[in-house]
Length: 105
Image (cartoon, rainbow, N blue to C red; front, top):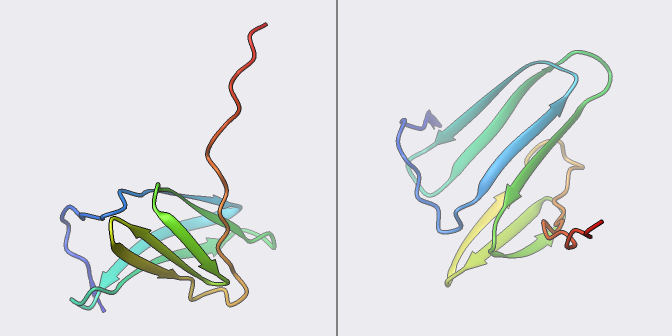
């Protein structure tokens, strides 16, 4: 895999992706591609202690199908599959971003 050149990516899903890492001494995001349609996004994390907790978050309006470490996103007839390679016991989860209306006081 070669590092991905610095350019704008066009995703059919327009995802908003963030990562939250607790108790990390250092973190480096690495994006690689072999020139095909496969892209690997890796977080290289040096942990500061025994607590090892990282959470990726993505906001999308695509239809999501989950199966353990795989997530399939579909929108407008196009599909993308995301696979968590490590840790082996990690899994995807869908959480709604919708919030209840605020109550006036």
